[in-house]
Image (cartoon, rainbow, N blue to C red; front, side):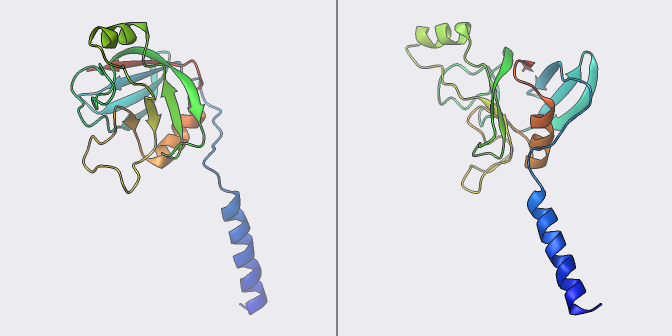
Length: 164
């Protein structure tokens, strides 16, 4: 192979690499519900009653029990929905949960505290984040590659059920 051919090939690979994106396209069945089983550390994307994808997950650093107040390190339990998308997340990509709901706000108010918020499904940890299996402040974490798939598959408004 001569040098000119090598350089042209290298340039083509560089251009193709620059075209890769964290934003994937998904043309499969609609994700109609997300199920999270905290104790099993598993999340499922469903189309009706059919499992489309399953993921191992990390949770808040205090994973047992329902999130009650800001800073408790717990991941919520109950019925919520995906209420926002963040393509510029500090954790690669993220999908926001509708936590806190009215009941969460009332329970925290009764304790004289804030319920917190900003609970997301998001990509992998950053270098400065705590180590160990459950490291988030109450979010659900998957790998960045998995988050790219999830972000392409799940629409705003999709219900999510979080179980103990």
